[in-house]
Length: 263
Image (cartoon, rainbow, N blue to C red; front, side, top):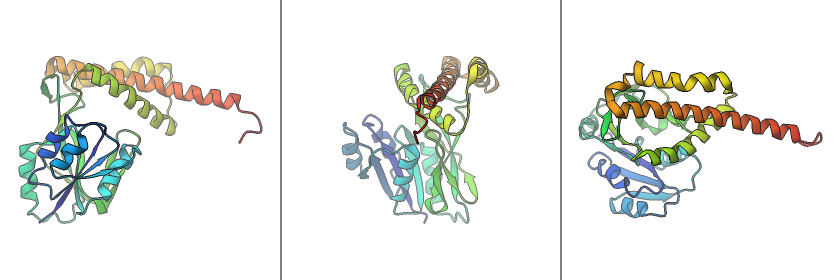
């Protein structure tokens, strides 16, 4: 049997962690929750549901997920975010897989579907959102930038058909809170990679992102939610580029004010 350790990272997720951990019942042989200092009941709920709770100061998404994977007793790790759950269809698929021989497969991509504005989003760039979440920890590591991190497997990968269910922003206010954080992290990644924004990209990129999501990716078929997702993607792009320019300008100003004998 393929034994699985489920790994979840948390911070103030008392409203969501019960759903996430409950969906692991029957498929996870071990549940690890790595918490970065929650002040609500997140860790209490996780402990009550049988998880091994470990506290670790926040080092970043990539590093925290790697830390959680490293704690796993089993080589096979199922990485789950606190705002996700394993669908019944995916749970049944994983249960059947546990009695199969995975051969040389190093990991499995799971399609993620997002619930937003009262419906499942089945178009735009949000779907199908393939995530490599079931993997052998000995065959790769978490890589990527400050955002958009992912597990990079060494070897063959395959895919399952059951969904990871993603319960994203509850309302617009929650989206705006996340936008402030994620756009800053994404801008820092851009600067690290030597990318720039500039007026042309600020003018053309946001509407092109909207067009891609709403028209090319058929977001219009998701009604008002599809329009909102497409608009949010455009807004996110604009703020990421603006903050990139801001960071670049700050770097120029720092260089200009540095004394000649400064290191």
